[in-house]
Image 1 (cartoon, helix red, strand yellow):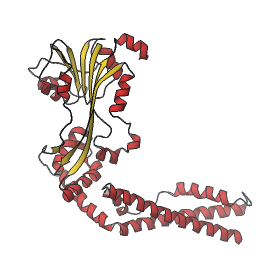
Image 2 (cartoon, helix red, strand yellow):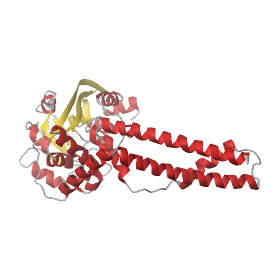
Image 3 (tube, one colour):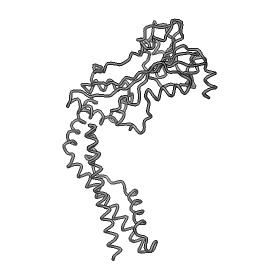
Image 4 (cartoon, one colour):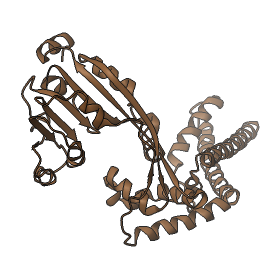
Length: 365
């Protein structure tokens, strides 16, 4: 009898501890959600009750039982109490989960109702055809990549661009030396050629091995505009003393969007300092480097949608996946007149210190 009483007292104590801990966790997460304006969090309490933790909690209660009840191990009585303990533990956990869900429905009813209405508006927007709108507000840039690049460009240079916009950046560059290439990894070559029609530019792509389509020590200035790149390939194609202009978005760019779908802990840190060090490690000397922390303000879902479709192509295929984000944006637009996204980019101008062969030997490329 004492064993039975001890069993149930321990079980009730565990239930009480779990309930208190889960309510505390819910309150902490709710406070964090309100602080970050992520009221989509509260919608988990609007889901129908479903319990699918039986196996996991069975293991938990099994080990708890082993820890506290070591008398007559593996006896018939011991196994009987074990089965009762696990069964009661799973039932108790299921009850706790239901109580927490019910607690959340009452505690956060205001946010649930508000978010439901906003989600309905977002889904209605997804289902209608609305003209694209690019009339959003952008912060003043702190540097001009075109002007910085032209500082290091000579009329007789071999210039190579690498970008991801189908040739738009190259077209805006306007001043071209005798030999100019545009490497577009993500666009059809014919489409880019049409965009750059009439300009003295040779359009090309990557090789089958995903390398740059140039001979060793061939390029005087290589300008990368927001594209991924292989630094070893850049070293290979640049002439000794060649210039590499690297203009990139950092890992803090559009962080409000990325944090919802890719937590910071899962993203590599990419900023001006990490990029500079990666170039120094393969034989570059840094000549100039600048950062630009800015913002984008969107005053309608149409403006936000138009922008994000350019930078997140998945939006055109998986709209429902991003309902929570658009709902949060719509809430800000209604409350403060706009939704803000943080931007972060940087530019580095670096000079190659020697030939590819020398650097490859020194740095073991």
